[in-house]
Length: 438
Image: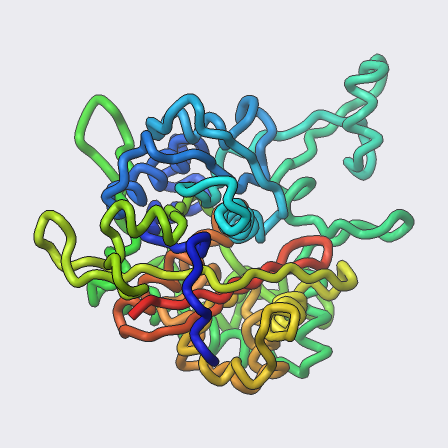
């Protein structure tokens, strides 16, 4: 595909960082989502060598915000040391929240409304609270009854906000709300994806995640998170990649459709804690700050401190797509096809120029189905450092996490184009096309 002509309001990503991802109830369980988000923002700003005082806007994804406090994105901005004048917006697009936050940040720059924006996503699934409802299905009527009329007589039950607000499909009225994995099983049937294929993909995801850490590549993405202000203890590495017991993989029971299902706890994404953030600037501001050369769009070879510069990236286009809620697993394909359309000055043949792909591993069937539907995606260039199956899937964070990983992979291999795509509950997805400036 032809490189887009440079424009003053191009949205450039100058740095991205993420926290380690902690397991449910793991090392990060005592750290709030806001603290994780602030750590990612500080890390991204430090990597960008941009003072926080310059940040004009902050868009941050968060899905399980009950009991987190008012305006989570605003809390992140203030805790990260951004100025009180920074305008903040919390984004809830379920699993795609972090990606949508980055897209909104880019739009703000493209429209000339801001020159420096921070965007990302966060989640502490370990700290997600329970809601109180009346006995029965735990649906919204029960939760509402507590507020309107009180429980009065009879029992009440706890409603898990992880399930209610995050992992139960947003089905139309009249249909039962099913766990997302139920429809992952349906996707496997639709595309004839076997249990063996899903388990093989799972093993490969774990292998790639482990190799990413052992090679040192993964550490480039991560900013350590202090665990206790009273001492220097911190977590600097993802927890999940070394937890898989491969010998037990074939013996696991189906997690959703107990009779005929092939989706298990192992070949699904893991409930996790974490955050990720990127710093975006306009091309005009990047030139003013000396991040790109004054006479071209190329990234400079060195920074002011003399160290080698990281690459700078352009967010070329972003697309959202929606389809039937029960087919959310195929929504990334819909979003990618929309991305490579005349609406964005592209066409399907331009997919051949994409060097690497990040498609969130909500379940192993999601990237496997994408490969089936989009033959231009090569498995060896897809999720090269593993994904949510082996790393974890903090809901509000993952859309930003895959972008941070994509930037790091493009940098490592000196490739030009990458695509990040992620499905979300309700049948939606967000896809981003990113170009490394060379």
